[in-house]
Length: 112
Image (cartoon, rainbow, N blue to C red; front, side, top):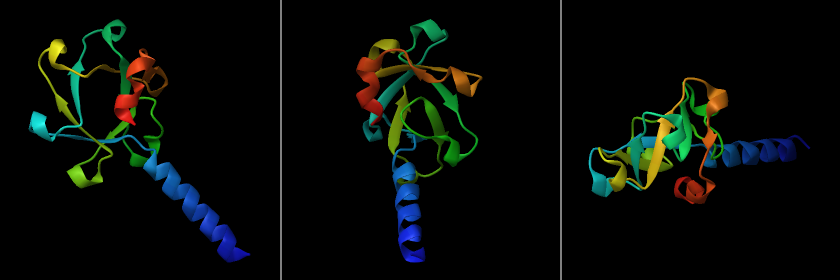
């Protein structure tokens, strides 16, 4: 019984880790999965992002991001562009976790 319970708990933990939004900021555009432009206003953004302090807080695809130090630890590799026209996704960094979320759900697939 204990083995089954441990197996279930391990599976749930792995599933949660697989859905986490861990991102790595690339130095080169060619290394990135998604090109990002940071908007000055929330109303201009496709996604409002909150930078989490802990990896365990960054779950799902709802704009809760945890920046990792190594490319191999990231689910998505991103590159910050200087012009909105070069971006695949426009984001706005929020000060509060509750503000995070998609404003343009048609681009949600970019972060899966």
